[in-house]
Image (cartoon, rainbow, N blue to C red):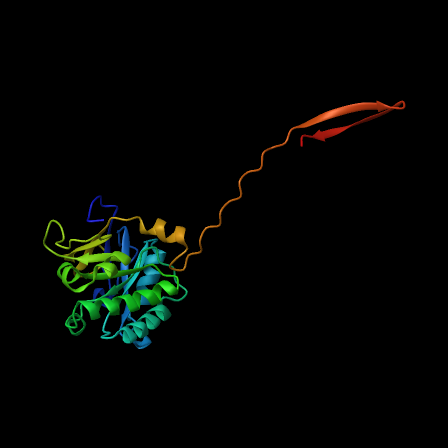
Amino acid sequence: MEGGIIMKKGIDVSRWQGDIDWKSVRTDFCIIQAGYGREISQKDICFEKNYAGCKSARIPCGAYWYNYAVTPEEAKKEAAVCLEALKGKQFEYPIYYDVEEQKTLALGRDKVSAIIKAFCTELEKAGYFAGLYMSASHLNNLVSEDVKSRYVVWVAHYGVSKPSYTGAYGMWQKSSNGTITGIAGNVDINEAYEDYPAIIKAAGLNGYKKPQPTAPAQPVKAKKKVTITIDDHTYSGLLEEI
């Protein structure tokens, strides 16, 4: 959607927020940086701690992976490492590809779009709900329409009443200087307009199993007590309606 009813207000965090006191944090959701690049050594040093903190505080969370890839092949490698970092975890919000590196953006619309598609396709193959994070201007100018409509969008645009991005978006990062109890310094502030936890759990994505359909209740068949006499012998019992 292009903005609309605010369903939830949340934050996103990374190693730059340092040691977070998750018991004190009050937020509807959190998107955690999982890492960046093509090596597992580039997993965010606070990712495991932040994920555990969200779970212990019962804060629904998603994740994002920062892009450095300049070819679709490199993007697939980044996706593989991202999946390794996500393994064994459950996320109620999408897994976003954070595309803002200048060397990638300088490649132009077609190549940027191909890189995004390569990364997100790998995530979807592995059963994850893939999304794209970019600034409003870059979304407008550097991503093809088919890619923008294929993956959910998390748009960044600060200091405005509404993002200048003209397409549909499910989340808006509206500020980078928010303050939250439990976090020292500034933190990004976001709004979500879709019920991602319900969508993801119903589809069995992001580490969740798809709910099994319940069998329809069987109608109760009527039973009657019957007594009959045959050759001076009396018999009784329950007869079930067919």
